[in-house]
Image 1 (cartoon, rainbow, N blue to C red):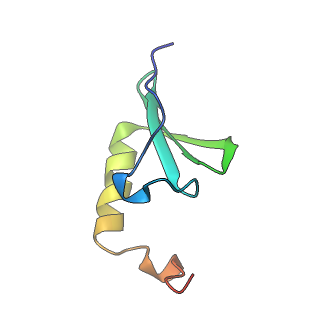
Image 2: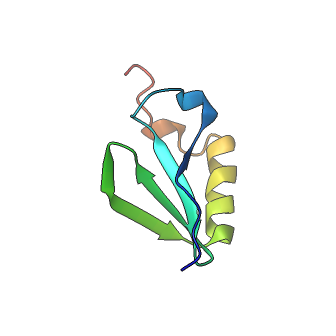
Length: 67
């Protein structure tokens, strides 16, 4: 099984409260670093579309920026 190591955003710094990503057998996997048991898998194309939506602010209504 070809996979890469879990990677987190450089903006996370030393924090353990972040989203991590890696690739496994051609799929993209995501997990929260503080709950590594739950892994979401998707295709690279769907992940790219999701990232475009994040960058465009499509999900800002779900965020708690006061936390």
